[in-house]
Image (tube, helix red, strand yellow):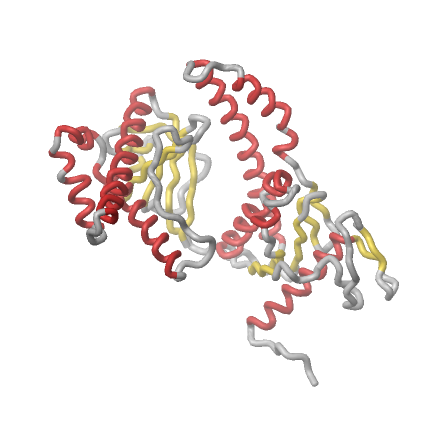
Length: 383
């Protein structure tokens, strides 16, 4: 399976200038390719093929005085920028025809030099390498210092150099990682994700919601207020923008670290994990939008998915319309209308339920039934 490993980069001032030049050239090539295809479409001409576009936008453009500076960066960076454009068009066309699943993909749009995030990609053709001294050697940029936090499991097939809104540089390696099955265990767990508690497990354990954004609101508000007082276009405003970006980056990093540690612990502890397939996009349109985004449910579930595949575990997603909260885990009776402020309820059979723990137990039971059906078990009840 393919995995992505991210490491912090510390380029020198000269290397930062070379990276800025590479970011700009990749952006120009992307925009030139998009403009060429848009002009061809407006003129009623056929769609420009990928090979013809590369020849026109890169090979021939380098020979002109207006684009001669494209030769100052690696050609692989320019080719990968056009590859991103071609992929964006393919996704757009597949979305229009209905072949692409998931949210509808829009038409490609022009990239701005004011974007908070800039990125370039080097493939093996660029002959990037990790030096014996532990530095990342990039063509026409040099040997960049890397802060290695772990070893790469295999030789990387590509590396993407990213500059985020906070001005930090990262190297993102794509590597092939073999499966590492963990010793089998008999424990299985159902997880009910929420806001009062981030996760409630079917064994009764409750994981508190860290609320990273809520806890950082005061610091973020002060940084945003300081930004609003700076004159537009001034150097002080640029510094204030960087302070706001760094404050948000700290929140995102803390949330990601929490999700990584919790998902790893759950995957190592259980042979099968059952979660509810929540409609995060729909919940994000309600008054709970800020809290929903702060929780980061989708990020956590995605981590569970790829770690389960890597370590030989099973992840089962339960349908979001399954009445996990209102279904009695003891007798199977379904309660009536139950508003969110009701956190515990009593079933007519006499069982007293904590709403979240009961939901986690029902998710576990539904996940076990789903696994049985997927393995060829009986779907219809016996006569």
